[in-house]
Image (tube, rainbow, N blue to C red):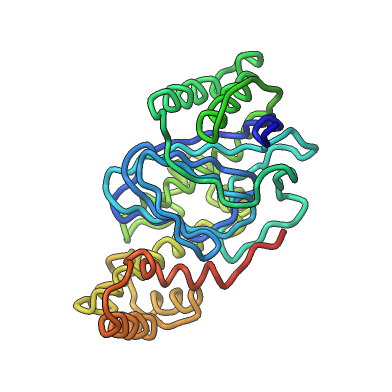
Length: 319
């Protein structure tokens, strides 16, 4: 008997979508397990300080409470993400998806894997993308269903997806639905990721959802561990790290490009997020490039995302 024959997955939630060139999701920790299916394009995930490159068709299972960040490599990325538990357990479905660094998850909110699941990171290529994509589309349909019986079959679909992705096939058990609050918190996150107008306040952006700003701030913090403004700043700082590699850009240029109107405020936020001034970070990157240049050629995968690797590897998960 293989370990896959012991699983009876409990489906939590599904989301899917395309993102733009250069998109970055800052370091975060999730409550449960996440099956990530890359069906188009390429992205890199920095997980526990190690870079995992996913080029379609590919998959990876992100374990709970492991610090990871995601970086898009080209403009054609499309991902399907399914949150689940390997077997039914006493814990309720998590209200949210994740918390962003430096927030931590309390032990009672973590959904650990049972002992029989391998401790290595599960990842690889997808051999039957068309079938898996069709199953995932049906899973999305049934997640939205108001028919309780039909909704329960999400577990069966997930079991087949996991068997096809990881190895084999069979049948399944029970499930709850994602709470409206979790969906609303996710909508807030998506809005913040699209915020490009520097002159439009976060409050104005979020109130377009039809709820008070104070309510949305409380909701977002409960689900992700930080405020909407802190999340937006974290996104901008990650984008700034990439721009700082271009020595032709002044600090004012970098600040404005990522959404900060004032270089002083940008510098303060950058230092709070990374522990370094932007100028010190740029100098460190320049020196590192100079050392690599004189050291000779090497595998580019060993050097990409060095800035994020330092942050992620410096914080190991507490389980």
